[in-house]
Length: 306
Image 1 (spheres, rainbow, N blue to C red):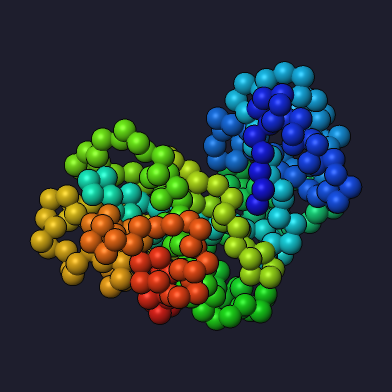
Image 2 (image 1 turned 30 degrees about the vertical axis):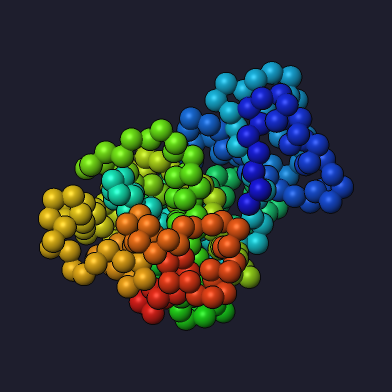
């Protein structure tokens, strides 16, 4: 969703100018303080007055910054509860650049979802991060979400594997290439890798919304959803194969051939891109989908259903 960092007075004024438009009268906003984590300090607001009461009227610099986003008011729900999804982006190598995607998990809010004004101050209804939430019935798998989406929201039975996953993989590639194009002067270093987490929401119409990317995600065990510790073990194994024993990889590292290692799905290999001469171009994003491009559409991964 659209977002603004209102840290500086100028950016703050630009946001309030947008938020004050008549067509924004019914917009709900979510504010996320900079330098925070696990959902700490996130607040929901249904008016400019509420935001100004919390953050002021643009008279001074906000030390850590505040990111304000348009709140997604019509999310798909799990038994009446809001949820979000996490997927992973792994830059497995920087020399050459090799990037993978992996399914993550679902976090469900403890309290029932409502946009009534009286409910907006309830973080247990609107903030799905695990901080403060009950550990019971909080984490779910993609497979469990698929069952709920079909049963309660009328989604296709393969929505997560054929629609969400391919979209998330395209977005993973888009984000990587956007950052890669800004790395002038970066010195590729053998043995270096970096894990990121991408957080999402799905609305009632099946729209998929990237909320944020996290550069230092928590590596922990998520009980009862069949994801960890195998996720972390396989990540380390994959890194070892790429950097130490590449000859032991099962097949070539090719996006066109849908290379996958224990759930880690290849979305970008610099060697393959340079060999084909098919550099990613953001302006061709829709064309890649329409033509089912072998490197940038990821339809060849969609058959791996839950």
